[in-house]
Amino acid sequence: MNIKETIFEVLLAIIPITVLVSILQFTVGKIQIEYFLNFIGASVMVLIGLVLFLVGVKVGFLPVGEMIGSAVVSKGKLWIVLFVGFTLGFVVTIAEPDVQVLALQVDAVSAGKISKGIIVIAISLGVGIFVAMALLRIFLRIPIAYLLIVGYVCVFILALFTPPEFLAVSFDAGAVTTGPMTVPFILALGVGVASVLGRDKGGRGDSFGLVALASVGPIIAVLIMGILF
Image 1 (cartoon, rainbow, N blue to C red):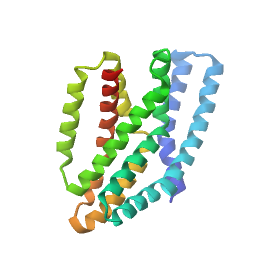
Image 2: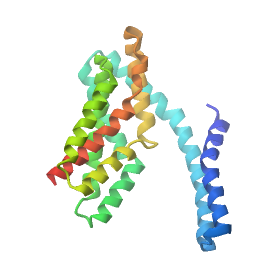
Image 3: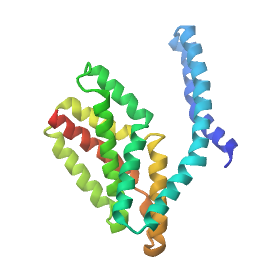
Image 4: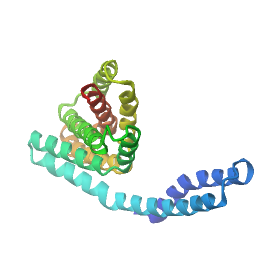
């Protein structure tokens, strides 16, 4: 793995926003110098943290995800693959920082009526179920367009019956599951599953689309929670 390349990628992501905020500070922004210095210090910490995180993803997450996907398929039992897919999708989503931030915001705005734990569990269940469905799609060779169409038809139907505040939260829930913890592991898992099946069925390209399907699950889960709440 090339660490210099990883550092360069992070610099490309961090430097533009840092430069823009600095320009605004000395032109039209004029925020307190204390806050500006805190921003600069935080930018440095984000830079270091992202480099370490991406190194960890490339060294640990991606290889392990692929190996798990290959190993469970080699067992030859579909239920094991689906169970592992659901469990990994559920657990990784709970650890997703973006999900935690959204859950905290919802808990604060609702004054505790919609607790952080309920939101996290609902989103995680949605991801877990749809990761299992995505893996099932690889086995059955179902075109991803069909599942996406059915999924979003369900979303629009449920949106007619859920309260407006849950509607907004549901689509945010779908977005936050495409974070730095969930995406690498789910993609690697799909690559591992498809790499084994692809040797027999020519379907390695089926590893793509897992994140698209996984992001539909939380939307449906939160909409259903809104109807039941």
